[in-house]
Structures are given as structure tokens and as C-alpha cells.
Image (tube, rainbow, N blue to C red; front, side, top):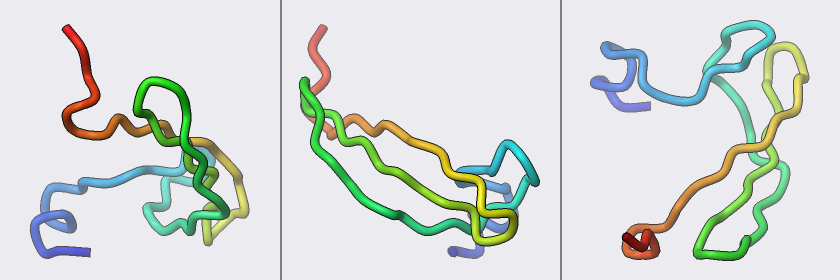
Length: 60
């Protein structure tokens, strides 16, 4: 994690424990240029899904 990320508290936060340390279980492409990532918190084991939009794939 970069120095700026630590200072400004950037990143994904676990909703259960507030930890910012997680790992990706798997990544899948979705329709419309999106990516779904299934993640697990390294502290409490809570699993959650994040959705990302690739640059240039947003229309409008």
C-alpha cells in the first residue's frame, strides 16, 4: 500500500470489521466492460464482491 493510501485511508474497507487487508478469491468479466471480484477479509473472513468499470468502457 502506498504512503498516500495509508495517510488518506484509501482502499476497500471490510463492512464487518473495518480492516483494509483483503485478498481476491476470483475475478470474472461482466457485461458492459465491468469486472466482478470476489474478495475475503484477512482479519474476520467476511466475503464480499466488488465491481469495477474499466477505463473507456463508460458510455454517456
